[in-house]
Length: 350
Ligand code: AQP
Image (cartoon, rainbow, N blue to C red; front, side):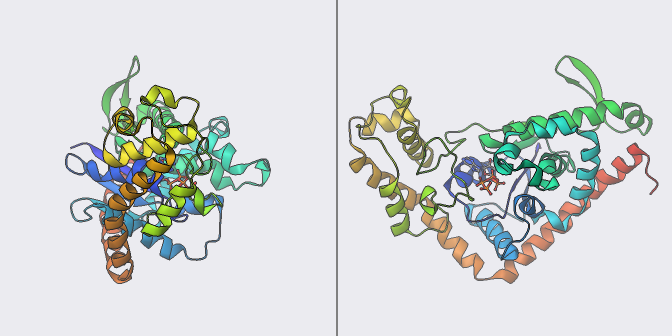
């Protein structure tokens, strides 16, 4: 079975973008893959070092995974810091990756802002840790939102440079397999990673600005629908969502140049498992005053069972902690197997 890995940061309230862009895909992949889903707590201290309730945030991401339908018995759910091999491999990847590669990452530029000299070194090195998260299990498939595409390309670059730089050592130890990357046949220890980005909502945009992605760290709570929002809050946020004054077009082509309209129709399509064209066949010609209540109803129908289950799980922290602890043990065993080989390949004494 293909090995799937993905992670979510415990940096605040999970929102509809995280759900449609990532978690819903995690759930769907369980049937035909071996899946490892991680609460990436080490990543959460890159942009902001001190968190008021990091433990609570970690638990709430784990609760969202489970409430959405991830099975922690069949698959693995754990928090990153419980498996120190992630950080160990990330250090090695820091020495494989080049500073120029990191400087080009748009997420770093966005998150560091103008005062780049003052950003943490961890924020710059974030993609090395992400590469380590995936490759410490030698996972091949990574479901993420569209915003993570560039980081996954970098993961492939890091794997390829490691494979090429250490090729003789990899062969000498009898590890790795012959593969072709692009045109080039190589003997690889780390496999090339395939991003799983598609789907109807690869990028959900802010409800206040259709050109910005919906984000946990947006200061305006009205910009996002949180998984823990109740029905009244969802209704209010959708009613207040920014739109233009025109009626909805009857085909998806007519959404061009109307980012807010495109976003709301895209959300409706993703929540109802339909295409934008199908949604517009129903709502084309109608005003937002008619479309918005229908969208709010749909969002509440889809999210309320998850919200309810999350609240129930969050009331039993011992249960969540036990799931994470057990997942951590299973993940550690697998990660250590890779690290023993990586230490051999590099030439560390162990
Ligand atoms: N707006 C979005 N649309 C689609 N997918 C999204 N994801 C995030 N925002 C959207 C996907 O959710 C997964 C988890 O994200 P993360 O918490 O690890 O990091 P992030 O991408 O930095 O998420 P946020 O919400 O924007 O958080 P902050 O504000 O803390 O940076 C990823 O697969 C991501 O693609």
